[in-house]
Image 1 (cartoon, rainbow, N blue to C red):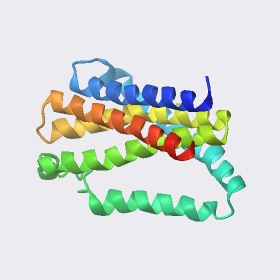
Image 2: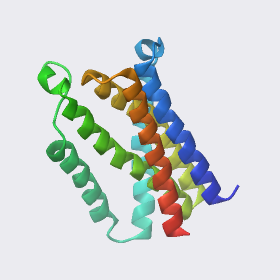
Image 3: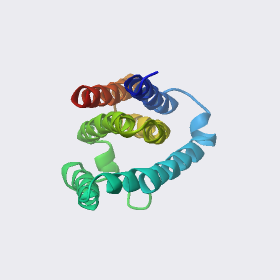
Length: 189
């Protein structure tokens, strides 16, 4: 398979992982109680490894101003996380009145939709540089797509939406991942 075919195929696998994560929450399952915390932790660790061991060094080899772009991306993520979406968290400071508000699910959906597009862009971008980097990024994205689906479905259900809406939202995120990959392939081809 060629690099573009690999990137698109793995974007589809990542998309399916998003839906699988949502299904774990929206459908009856023992996985969420027993194994899901381990899957989320493993995916987070792999994502950090991908960023620090592969993506950042490769970026710095390719362009001199990579640290500025990395910082800009990090700051943009915080801007969206803390400014444009209602802030909610779990634990001792849970604000249940915000969790039950339907606007929370909409803002989370829009934010994760944009995030999913960039997941697809990241996969295709990695393959445009070299196959090894593309595979590494794709694996990191796939591993974090399960928790992304869990998050989206959980927020939808917590805000009073139906299990069907929760699953539909993960399908939309899945489509956005594939769209991001296709856009990057079109721009880079």
